[in-house]
Image: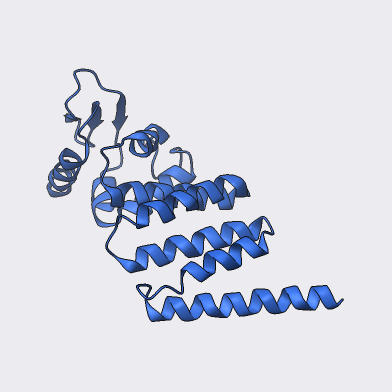
Length: 193
């Protein structure tokens, strides 16, 4: 089908090391990457999944990842794919960023805040290699949120200050400044009490 071909094209560009086998809903199996033996083999049984992966990669993969790849809508998507993306140094920066963003969201949902901080630090690092300032701003906000979850107020304030840089979109700068003011105000109230 058309969406199978589009997904095939996307995956051919991504895998440059190792090998990954994917069986499409029509039963066709394709290998991606230069390796002789597949590191991962996944089977897509839901005919709608190739389309969803193409149109909303982060959402479709995120739903599969957050459910451990066992949700009724995604019975055959495996967390192994995420491990491949996360560990592949040749992965495009944007894809690695999305991987760490999903990892961050999953860690926050599971209240694994130290792991969320580590994922968010990776986001900030990767966002320095991405031209889009919105991604940088998003990365900074995610790191500050994880720090706040651990009640690291001073660290969160310092992180929000990074969002005041001139290259950050003005709306994100305003949001960061508001968060800094609120956090410092709350700290002062607590100190007075």
